[in-house]
Image (tube, rainbow, N blue to C red):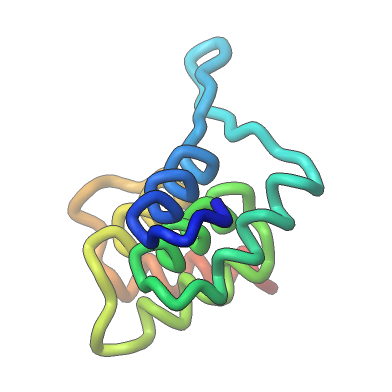
Length: 111
């Protein structure tokens, strides 16, 4: 995740952020202070794809920084489909849930 190559950092961040484990039919994300610290460092990466992967990884772990940054993205006019997908996964909602409902759901998680 500290590689000079931005694509390598992006893929490493993706792997760490989305490293999900399914137990008894429920998806879990490996979590530790070290994982969150690594993802938090990437939220300031100069490569936007790596930053987004870090935000999504933190948000999936219900980390307040990740949730806030994800909400900030969805509140902007330049949100990505991955922002929407991450919010849907976090909130366990249907694929056709409007973005306005996703924003409200993230606000509830943050309050």
